[in-house]
Image 1 (cartoon, rainbow, N blue to C red):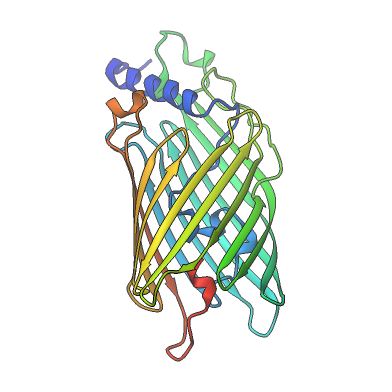
Image 2: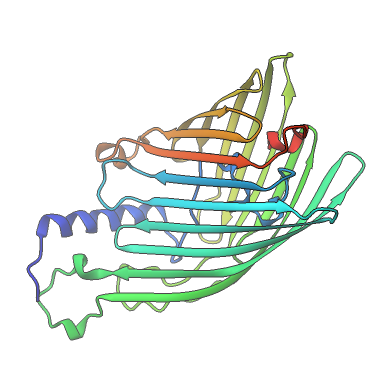
Length: 311
């Protein structure tokens, strides 16, 4: 058996223990985002087509900066309405790593949009798969034969989800269950999650016109997971001259967050969010979380920007 780096192994056990405190469920938690209000397809398939044109969004999140093995997440979302039809299509690619565990996912989205008197109601479905992998070599402490402990684990899990999304000129609300199946993950070791757990997301926001150059948009995200405390994110973003979003968020029981978004053109948006280190024991070993986002919408030069772009 190879020589064990005790310092490295201890670090990983610390991470696993802390993750156990933060995620008490026996299930793989879906990734969280501070900029959820600008990255809707990652949570709700009914969001597809809401930008009114082909839209590309790339997001990377580095959580608990300075802590070895901390969560690292990258997503890429693409969605677009289909010309002269009420349907929209989309796709989300995800990579998520926590310690020795890695997740890769691919999900395709279909949304049917219905024009109403004051807004648009969208009904969405998604289907795809998630691949989980774990390399447990760095967690081995006991001098026992390799045959007694399987160091490498992997699972391939298909799944599907659904959602609703309603938007008007000033208001939006959405409800989704991105992964409905609670697939079992056959991991025969004491530190692994054993199954996927169903998540329920409720989101909403409203746009207030304060003046010609100022708009205020409060948002909320409510996450419900069986066996875990209900999590609520409250956010308020101030839009200055239709160019700069400045916001602050609070994730109850966790962090305060700051958000800066730059609408550089009709097509291009750049976003950054910083999660301040919480007051828990994690604050002693990490210096907050960073989240970067790029969004590009293929609008024509003469096309007027639609109100859903605020959402």
